Image (cartoon, rainbow over all chains, first blue to last red; front, side, top):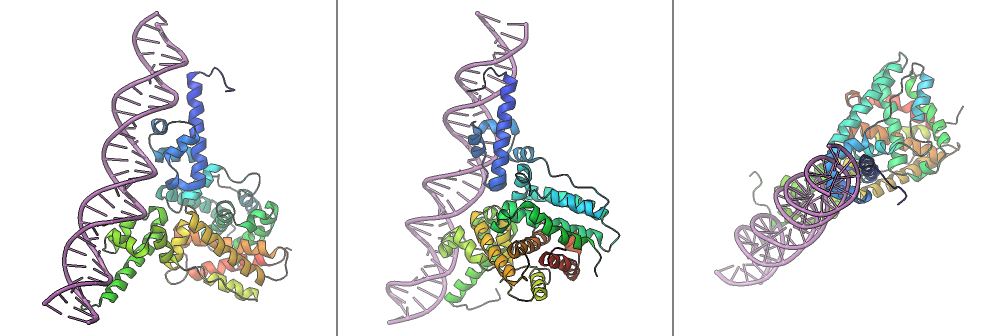
Length: 188
Length: 188
DNA sequence: CCCCTCGCTCAACGGTTGTTGACTCAACAC
DNA sequence: GTGTTGAGTCAACAACCGTTGAGCGAGGGG
C-alpha cells in the first residue's frame, strides 16, 4: 500500500468515496435496476453490508451517487443561448459527468430517475423559453430545442452511434447550430 | 362469456394473442427487466408456466411481442424526405405502435434492445444520408436528423413532457420542419 | 365409447437480490 | 493498560424471479 498512517476518519471518508465512485460508474453503465449492491461493493473492495450501513438503501446510494444535473443556462441573447446549449452537450473533453449519464441511463425504466429528469428538463425548458424572442409558442420551441439536444446526447453518449462518435465535436456543434437557430426563429 | 363454441385451435390462438398483447403493453410501460413473466401471465389470465411453454423464454417472448420497427423512408427529394420523417414521428393518431415503444423503453438498459435500436437507427441514418444532396458530411447530417427526431419522440412518448403532450401534432411538425431542413442544407 | 392429444394449472426448485444482526478487530480516549 | 467506539466482515433471511416437470381435464378422432 502506498498510503500509510491514515486516521480512522480518513479511512472512512476514503472508502465512502470509493463506494460512491464505483456506484456512479456502474449506475451510468448498467442503470439502476441492473446495478447490484454486491457489484458496487466488489468494485470498492468492500463487503456489501458496509454499503448498506453507510447509505441505508440502494435508492439512497443512487441519489447520493448521482446528485447533480448540468446547470441550465440563462442568457437573454439568443445567439449566446444557443452557444451555451451546444457547449453543455457534453461533446468536448470526456463527455458529460458520470452522474448525469447515470441519471439519463435509468430515466426510461426507473420511476425516480424519470421524475427527476422530467423536472430538470422542465426547468431547462422554462429557462430557454424565457430567453426566446417574442415569437409564437416560446415554450413549445424551447421544448423542441431541449429534446433535440437530448436526442443527440442519447445517440452519442448512451447508444454509441458510430457516426456521431467518429465525428469531431466542433463539427457536430457547427451543423447543429443552424437547426437550433431555426427553432427559435419565426416561421417564414 | 360471449364467445361460445371455440375450437381448440381457436382458443390456443386467442390466448397466445392475449399473452402477446399483455406482454407488449407491459414491456412498453415498464421495460424488459421490470416486466415479469408472472405479470404478463396475470394480464392474460393465464398461468405463468403457460407463457414459458408457448414462448420458451422471457427473451423470446420479448422479441416475439415487440417485432417491428418503423420502416425507414426512402425518398430522393429532400422536401419529401423531411415530410416522411416528420410523419413517422408518431405524433398523430395514438402515437407509435406499442412494440416500438417497448423497444425504445428498454434500449438504454437492455443489451439486446440497444443492439437492435442501434442497428435500426444505423439503417435509417444510411437511408437518409443517401437521400441527402451532395452536401458535406451527408452521413453525419443524417445522424443528427435521426437523433433529433429520436429526442423529440423520447420527450413526447416516453418522458411525457407536458409541453410536448399539450401541443398539437401539426404545430410540432411545422416548427420542426425548418430545423430538419437546416440540417440538410449547406452552411452559409 | 375409448383413448390419445393438448391446452392449461399446480407446486416446486435454484439462483439472485436487498437487507439485517451478530461478530471481529484495530484505533482512539482516558 | 483498559475500556469504548466504530470500521469492516460473515452468514443468513425473506422475497422475488425465470424456469421446470408432473399432473388434470376437456376435446376430438377412431
